[in-house]
Length: 427
Image (cartoon, rainbow, N blue to C red; front, side):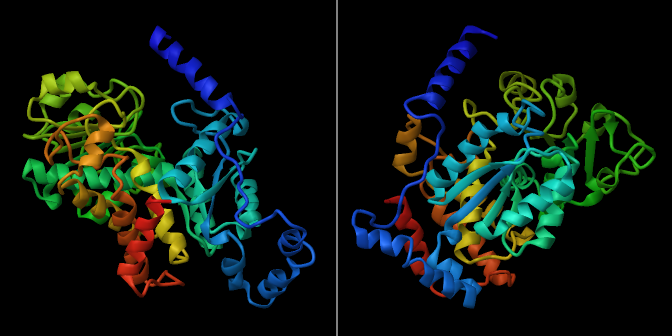
């Protein structure tokens, strides 16, 4: 560990411990200074909303905070780049996610760490506590269990459930891909795509890319053993879904004349030699974090025509999940969606892509200490501190929920909804 990392660690430990341990708290939303206040807040007054909810279950959204409350739930089996560190060690990360929900979308969130690696136990726990929440954000659960857990909870619950490690990355990567293809002058349906990695984010990205219009025959998935190909006998059902019939075995072979490389894998796996075999204007989303599949400097030296993004904040074009999950859940809870479907995810991707093509407001430039930012190779994904994100992404997702019939409390006045979202920025 170098001196810079040591200094950052020391600062981070102080940040998380002082003056109060942790990053989130609970704030009362009603008066509580008088005896009358307490009589209304608890016994005997609290019996009135309880009776109302017993008679009409939907009144829970009228008399409690359920409609603005998300659960951030993990078992700590795949935390950031730290791996399986356990439920307790995952808590700082889950608290951080809860803080981001509040900061960017005004959503309250409780972090819940479940001490089990058994999918049945995990699903049972989440199902049993679900009445508390308006939505469930699954986080940092390892593959392949995460696929089963999310699928079962989506079937068994009538509130939005999303595993952000899968879909958050996929949504932002899809937005980046749309704009990168535009810069490259290439049509989506003709793109030849290689995805390196076969975990949660890779599989979700592959599925969303197909929904975006990428042809299945043009998408190659690679894992730690090479190309996920039909002739292999060691593939699980999820990988077999993407197995190619081409007789290739290595990442290097897969990248020959490819238009797109999406890396959700390991540092240094993309070499300059491989990069030079890709098509003109290659699109490279190297998202291994903190060390990408190829460094920014090496990538630009190897291919001056590259269109490049990473998962890091200190380089251009950061594929950052915070561009998606706060606003997707904001919309899903606002319309009381029964699920977060593919159309809602694609709506988020398209809204992000469109936003990056618009003029960047001065307040964003000021926040990042820069004088100019224009759509192109150096900027094709919005910045996380862009205040337009809440209105634009949430509105697009809410519209998709209404149009696909999963909204149980549909918006009828879209201008009023946008004003309501904008007002949240000023709170």
